[in-house]
Amino acid sequence: MSSHFPFTAIDTSLFSDRYAVGRQRWLAQVAQLPGHYRHISYPCAGLGPEGEALLTDTVWIGAEDATKVLVLIAGTHGVEGFAGNAVEIDLLRLMAQEQIVITANAAVLMVHALTPWGYAWRRRCDADGVDLNRNVVDFAQPLPENPGYEQLRPVLFLFDIRQRQAAFADFTRQYGREAFESAISAGQYTDPAGPFYGGRAPAHGRLVTEALLSQYALPQRDLAVIDLHTGLGPFGYGEIICDHTPDSAGAAVASRWYGGSVTLPLLGTSTSVPKLGLLDFAWHRIMNAHSCYVTLEFGTYRTLELFEVLLQDHLLWAQADNIPARIAHSQLMLEHFCPNDVAWQEMVLVRARQVFTQALRGL
Image (cartoon, rainbow, N blue to C red):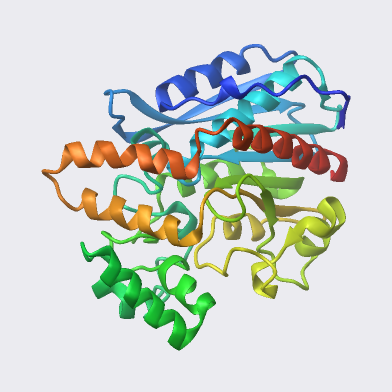
């Protein structure tokens, strides 16, 4: 694979605020691709807020027998799909204009809206409250425990924000900041109404991922997987987070391809703490020694604000009769995970182009 510079100017009008609009724009841009491509959709149960069907769309661009594949994933966390949608459309446009050229032995697989229900309803989770990025565990075995979450659970949904934040501060003083963030966000498997819930069975996005691994015989190919996320870290910066173990071939490949900007939660160098049940783990299991999986995480606002906006979201969705408040809060969810800020949007598109190109060169 290769890329030709200079790229076209950044276009922040690619960002949309509705799933149905974003999907139609994505499909329209796919239709502009030159050469061979294959589009497959995976229906998801439920409907969007406008009664629209919910689907995960995928497109394979390039040779069917490619030995090297770049996989770009958007919408693992539903509401984060708004930024992922714009990134994918931007890169599809560059491929249509042949400013990004895919060589004969390579292909790109784009996955759009891996959690389409959450994307459409502006939530991180699916209709069952499941966080796909905590869902990749063996459900035939005893599920992981998170005692810190159980300790904090009684205060998570207090209506008095000051009382809740005082409890958070007490926990942090006693156990440390990393323990506090792990207690809330590392993943939990006991509380469907709560945040970062890993579920009791494989979620839609996990089943789609497993289908793609089989459909395209991905375990037999060299892979560069980039999973697009937003909401954690400095405003507008795209952190390359590698959840491979530090001494693994995957971590070495990530360092070689992406350089010193790679961070590893297991080494404490990332804004992210180690997590349970990550989507990464489904890919780690099938990757060869020439492949790696990274999360490209675009920062927005402070971590404490992230927790507050998520907790309020879960609180409102637990109240079946509070639909107007839910709708109003969905705008705050959108703003936290895809800020309506032209500078932020420009930074996202520029950094995504940069990391995508690094992955192409690495492969």
